[in-house]
Length: 77
Image (cartoon, rainbow, N blue to C red; front, side, top):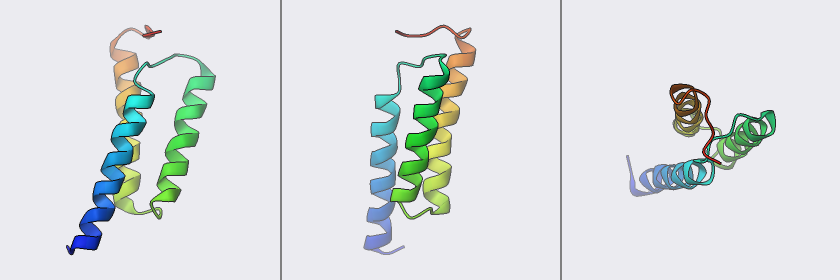
């Protein structure tokens, strides 16, 4: 992997962190989940629809969902 490829991955990971931080107050509303999915799709496109970007953003969405389910559907509002 060259320096440019490494930087692209760094940018994906940085955006993943910002995405997780932005949505960490997990809500149960359809509106919340639609916003999460929409933004993850936009970020995936921003990063060239690479498999790496897909897996990273999907892992954040899955983590938000897991957190919500494991906390009995309670919100952090």
